Length: 151
Image (tube, rainbow, N blue to C red):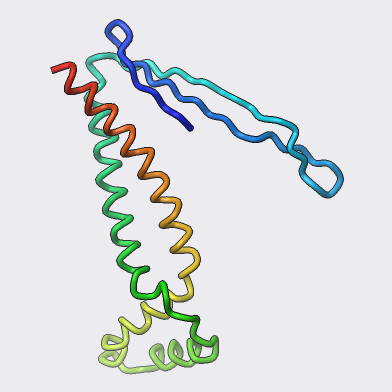
């Protein structure tokens, strides 16, 4: 998806271009038969540009925070090899059966076991969020420039 922001008269035009591959079933396979292309123009009233800007700014800040939290959880486990299923099962069972104090002291271990189980998913989320952040940052930069020009 490619976006362009430009002022036209007293409105902000957000031009969104989408392009993707078209696949159709061909027997048991999917065959690439071409592409589709779609262009959408969103017209934002001049007095509502700040509403859009504030929304994008908020999305940017929220996404940065979530990405940092996820990256912080992923960092300590990214190079750790998988723990055997038996070990994980026995650790979780021991934690579950333990006293309240034991459960409290074992929270970090239990969280690590959960994180290891979700390691591949966490990496995929980080990759996806990083790509999304590139788009959000680009939108934010473009809107910041337009908002500053309107002042």
